[in-house]
Image 1 (cartoon, helix red, strand yellow):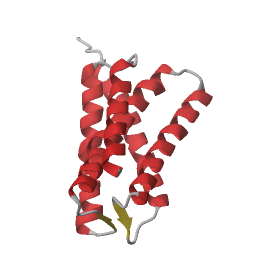
Image 2: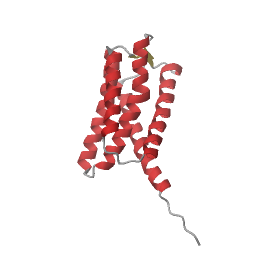
Image 3: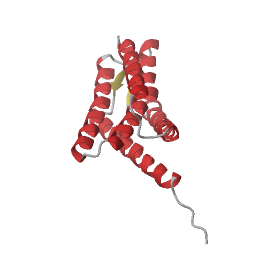
Image 4: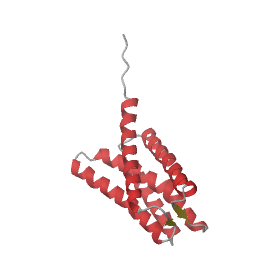
Length: 157
């Protein structure tokens, strides 16, 4: 059941990204997606395999559900977040969007625990909240860095 749910969520978040009006161009979207993907894969490798704070299910479909969450859903949520964040100009809407995005990621962790895809050993959901908040900051400041770097003017003497 966990695999079916995560497959559906992967499909829905990818469809949302495809049909939404994008504020970022393809280079910026791809760069943010790949950066978050690399950070997320390396963090999960350290957390799960090296430190063994969290264990992942050994069953094939549960492990594929974990891979879908780690490699597609979380980076795509952050790419959609950055696109929507720069669409909204109202500060309260941006705060609500951030809370919704963080809540969605934490809900995915809860679903993973419920379906026994993940098992916490020396870890808790508060650490995940901090990690996801840091991912949001990395995605946001990556976009700001790309804008500053890509549109820098050249001064000729």
